[in-house]
Length: 273
Image (cartoon, rainbow, N blue to C red; front, side, top):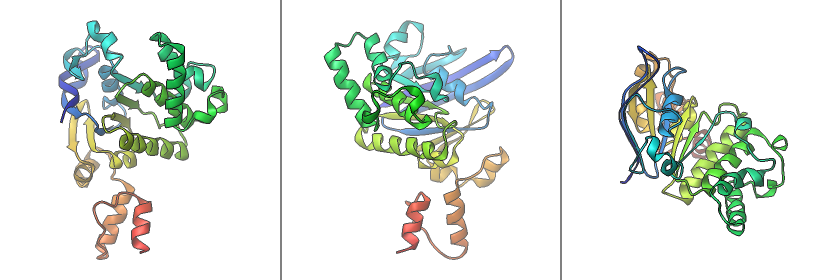
């Protein structure tokens, strides 16, 4: 598989003598959906900013689509990777949905006819075509995040980082964004997602989980493998997904549930057959 991101022996400190990230190395393949989890202060959001060159690394290398993340490559990197931030209100730039999605395209001097086509195409993809003339204060948090995603996709970016992008949303908004990610993955297998999150349930539906603890990689693997290590996770104060707890309880009662069942809706359907 081709790599979307490669991180080699990365170090970063906000203050001298206090390392926020220590010797971080991992690869992300194109089309992969990686959940990066850990407690506050584990280095998750710092790592996301380093990947997008919003912060420069102290030591080590990062490659995005084979382009090294450094100052002289910044303009090339902006054409490869985008980020959706935690607070949807802080990233809405335009006065309407249409203006916001068009903002990046205008900065690239895309001809107006093409820009209108792209805005409509990607507003439709994220389910916001009916809201093009709406202002930010008429939208929910989840809808604003959808607009941010549309703006990234309209620029042709294939690598998207969600930096705690669902943490300020209500449960409906959280589910909305999770479903959108899964829909986009099906539609475009080359789209790569890295989700910085506290949401264990989201991590469980990803392709891969990387757990950071005190600035280092603690565990890295497929969700079913990582979350089987319950005692190890509890040692750093992390829990396992609710669906795994339910399946474990059913197993204790000699009710075997197939591994491919990964959410409560699927489990309910299976048990009602």
